[in-house]
Image (cartoon, rainbow, N blue to C red; front, side, top):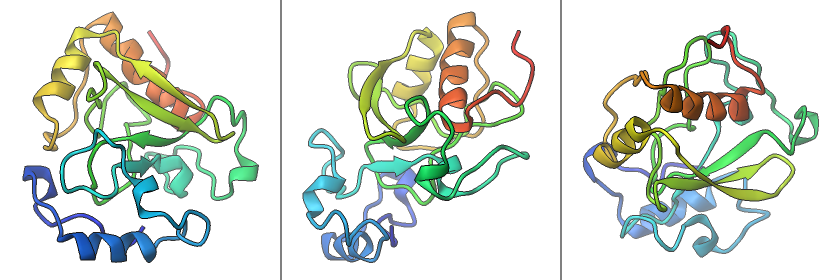
Length: 177
């Protein structure tokens, strides 16, 4: 995508609609997906025209030595690899977690019944509901803010972040407990 987010996005700031449309049309997907409404979940935040985010590994960007890919055809186990998330807002980077430890980088998304929708590298999509009460609380409390790294303490919370880590990276970058 081109720029679709405002500098104050984490405090609810939004670009004017025409600027968001320009950002969508400047993106690499536009030649293939030429309907602006496809880029927004109907339940997204009012005024946001792009509510989906690409996972950081599919953006070809490594975190702490994590595996990445730049071509969808090279994705190992594409039916298990997360490609897009229904984040609900337009933010300036791909969606990510830490690789070398069980921590969230971006907040858990809880806008659809304490879970969210994911699209996989093979093209299918699924809804995933979080199990950890602390995952749900963190997502609810920080919908439009970035509060820094979040390390779950409960077993259910750790399983939530590990589920996303495996989906993004294909594996954990540390020994699971």
